[in-house]
Image 1 (spheres, rainbow, N blue to C red):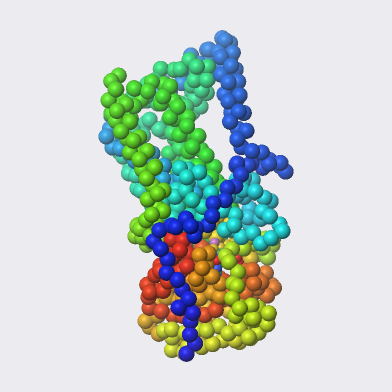
Image 2 (image 1 turned 90 degrees about the horizontal axis):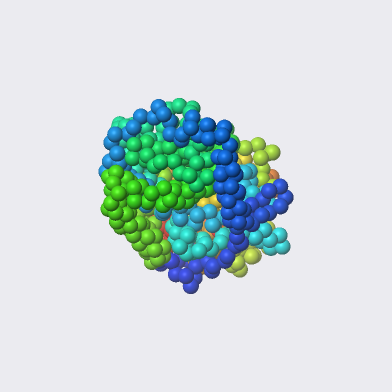
Length: 569
Ligand SMILES: Nc1nc2c(c(=O)[nH]1)N[C@H]1C(S)=C(S)[C@@H](COP(=O)(O)O)O[C@H]1N2
Ligand SMILES: [Mo]
């Protein structure tokens, strides 16, 4: 009976120990590419200040012109037809506003943490270094192997969540859990908005909103503020900004978020081509910039257009001049502040708990992605010029010998709950029915790439070894170690291994698979994230449960980096 290197799996701790975590590595200030030149975006601060002052001067000058004053008289800033909202700021609205900002704090911080795991943005699917339009990391070194993990950067502690390098696994639990809360809150908001008269605040009912918004902008910029009528109705500029945020930006964030998932992007044919992983990721980031700008302007306006009145509206529900709203808002912000400070240290200390809670909340929803049989294939012309590598190359003596012998003596061991445990030589595997597929790879860190893979379908191996009825999972053992030492392994549900595109690949782009990309054999499983596609496969085992393997989470990255074991999204 062929054995498996099960004793070489290591357990893992439930917390993040900084002593053996990826050491900090700082990137660079965010840079933006225009044509061939890179600009430091910190320049936007002085440039923005100059533009703001220029805007103020220009609007004050404009308002000296009689025609402009006539325009403002004609379009005073609020739609003359806009009905008054009679229900004020009901308690549900105030709670939803608070919960929204509370959830957004987690979503934004965790989102930035995810971005820092691959600190580059592209428009094309292939993530080829040099084609970014935005990065906060140096250029990719050309003189050595530079993996995607090497590329991840540290963020300031209070910005990222959990604030240390390469914590994409934990950040995703925060991001997606709070996405879920935020979506529920948003759905309730949409419903209540239209069940009451509150929708009238946000939905412009006439094109006059455009000249009125200009008029408001001019009035604000010239520092002669229009009267604050916020209790009854919003001015046109507010209305447009809120409308765009609630009805355009928020749905776009959800859509471009989902399009970054392999089970969705690899399924939706042409839509997945237009909103390819990188375009979706870039737009997702631009929506973040919209939200951040919105928050800055919105909060500034709350302060400068009558702080007490504004806070009495949104935090106290009264149209009054007292200080009650101020106190309620201060208490609410204290809660946000405490949660802000607490979240990262809590996550590092209770990483396993964060993973478990995340799995409980989201596991089933995400796993729905596996239902869909992904089928999108690309053409030869789509093949990426460069495919980011990831992982630690195997260093064992055994592997060196195999590699030096060009894997001629390699044998794949397949065992466990099967009728016919077998060892397959490399020649036998290559003589099996061969399948080729051109597919897009989605790494959890954010990069993607298209390659053509050739190999034997997993379903063929299953037919040969005949899993017993009790076999629920398929364990893959790698020759390589994981980042913290101990064997890299990974577990798949047997169902997913019967999928048409689940492949044991020995060729990449028409060439024998290189060691860098997983020779002698690596898995392709196109409805999961890249880390599930184990490289340098030594043995395969069919099991009923994986709870006794390693730290019991279903794979090396699941054990050590707190990823989820089913990751179609
Ligand atoms: N044995 C092993 N397999 C592995 C990894 C690893 O670290 N060790 N990394 C995974 C990750 S995170 C990704 S994205 C893909 C990358 O495959 P590539 O190096 O061919 O691009 O391999 C996966 N398979
Ligand atoms: Mo990955």
